Image 1 (spheres, helix red, strand yellow):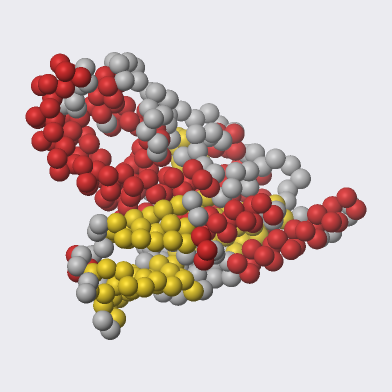
Image 2 (cartoon, one colour; image 1 turned 180 degrees about the horizontal axis):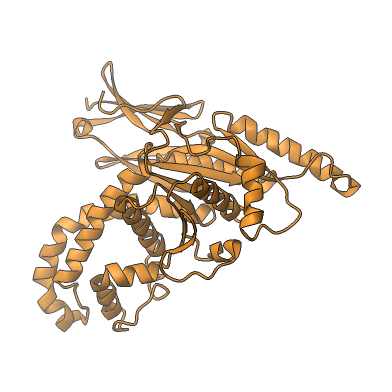
Length: 404
């Protein structure tokens, strides 16, 4: 066996390990409130907690009714808030790249991330790098991340792998290219090549990306929590979200069904709505039966201020060990079998007709809907080719054999 997977739901790490909890879901489902409730509960348990927002439309300041700047702010005992400004992070920690890109765009040092819109994922990258640095700093027992809506979160999670793949292909020739082409590039093409300091920053980012991938996929460190509401469009997107997150090998270990109407609301206007909500709640429970599921009621007022956020803690989180990490799904794994090897990839909820794969050089490329992932082949399989594939019960199995 080349690499073993992790199977059925098991608890890992206990409560003493430092951990990262990432909350995601469709826009408008209440991710920020649910993440804030977890942060409040964590802090009141005596754990040093950081609540981070990576959504460019930050609202932690509104929820906690405080003013936040570009740095981390303490708002309660054991609880810090941080609304990440990726441009500020880039300026502070990767100034040479920032300066080079400004020169390349002809705007000197005044370039900002809006000017860099041509580079998809820039904001996500620097948000993730900052979170990784905070985790490695060891100050916090728990880092709780309030992410942007589903699509942007998927971009955030997959971007390190995508960028590091390109950098791995290009970086070995990067320094040589700079040394050879720099003298002539500006003269002939009016394009300035990155200087030595910028290249060192690029190399620093590349090395951090490798560590970042390991951090995000480490079941003993990072948990993905999905927030949903009992509504048709949200239920369908939640199912797709779960499948895509598994495609990229992240561990989802919790589902939160938010804004559930009480059965005794006492208003005929809501009767049909309550019936529909029950159907969607049941659908979510059937699809995510392997996950711990938490139901959160509908509140009759906006959840702003600590006391209102505590209502979620009291109604849905009290008496639950919500910070216990559980490994629910298998990561992809390679196994030795008779005549060759096989690759197993968990894709729960995927439609068989939308799953495709092919081999590209030393990678296996898996497509599921609109998403694609490259899985590098171990050196042992470099001389093997795909001999078969099947998709059953949410698991893709690919077999490899020697070329004839």
